[in-house]
Length: 321
Image (tube, rainbow, N blue to C red):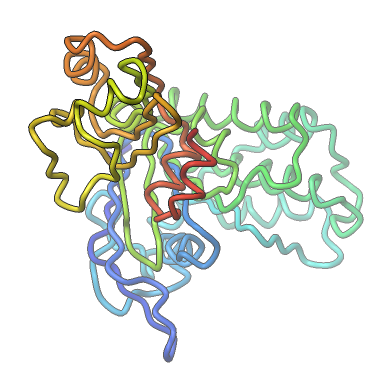
């Protein structure tokens, strides 16, 4: 099996007057789980449809280990997709869908298919139209995972699933990433779950990439801190509390002049800041000034999402502090 790196460079797609993708970039490493997050209408589903070979870009580059997916039947045999909106032929049962998939995918694994149906306690003979939304999603996972894909593309995969089933689904995915070097792209609004499962995150807005980082790096270089040097009059000797300027220039008397301050507010004698530095850099800059109060906390993915997508000051203050 070849290296399963997915690369997207300067991808553009336009529908009449609607620009769906406007210079989209992504780099998804081998055997990783990549989380694609963004507001509604940001272009997440459009990206997945391009990677699935359903849509063709206007221009830009997109490849799986250097191969273009468009009209590439051999490559598509190695890709499985679970869309947000599921469709099954009206009279079909899981048995019927299994027979269909076994004829379409060269690496179809019947043993896994039967095992997953049993794990999720689904009927293999009832018509899929009688399934609940959550049961249909489980059926889609049984089918997709039984194709033994090298690449798995998921659009809102856990929507409608209860916590026990979600845990079972993620176990199958994580095991295949570890055991078979499968590469996964998952788009979801469940940022708490994404934070716990993803190796790398891409945040998109209006069809282009705003931020793309490994989760470890993302957690390490962005923090919220609260600091007090005593009463406000004493603290103000170091300069009045002000919002960070665009070019991040601060006076020599500012106690935060060595930090990359992205957002700041003051509550009495306590300053609350969002800074783009490592914990070591933050502690070195603040502790030498003998603060009365000093706490450093990593940001959650939800907090990073709000900040990166330009939440206003009130929204950022409410979320972060």
